Length: 301
Image (tube, rainbow, N blue to C red):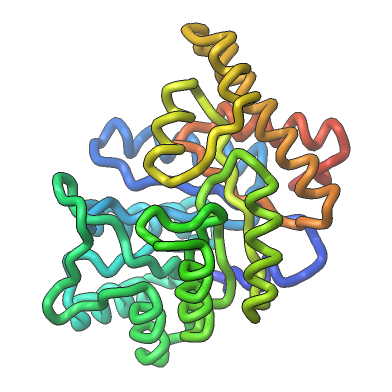
């Protein structure tokens, strides 16, 4: 059976890398939307790899596995399947990892995960993993050849007491066997650059992929910022407010802000972008087309 290439092969060199993140669908209509988007992105953007998330509280476990396989087998993508600690014993986690491997998947994003809906505090399974570094260790101890990524928070995890403490926890994940870090979305590049500097000072040497999400509306910017602890720059809020109520104009403003972020990231030596797209293709296409036309991104495909 053919299997994925390790993601570190895509991001370990000196070439530009573009990746896309999907969320598993909760309905058949949403599933068809993902596949339409995947078809468009494969034809027009040619991402180097894609990721698919794991629902809060492990609520989409089967859908994550199903669509990870579809994206790999039907579309030819190298796929990063997310996996969280939530609600699973260590043996259940090992079973999922073995199932991923038998399906040809070779890349896992190892996460602690968010509490199930309606709960505010994370409570590990009595025989499970309490932290992401423990999940990385568990996957490594299976002896299966996975390339593992972990999450980083440029403005710290919302539950961390400080950024310094959060980076110490991040180093534990890397030391346990993670090969790269993908950041949570951010709207102010200053936080990303400062985060990278602090990670390097702490002895973290693996690649750190910046995660961008082109904003679709002012409400979304504020809501996601509150959820993820991401600051909303006053200028972005001003631009989105100026066109509030006009869906197309808001999307265009969000894409332009992400373009500005990407221009600076690439100008300062960053080689990769990870895009959060909410399972829609429009903003990703506009962003990539704009950057390609400007010569910031090399033409893909």
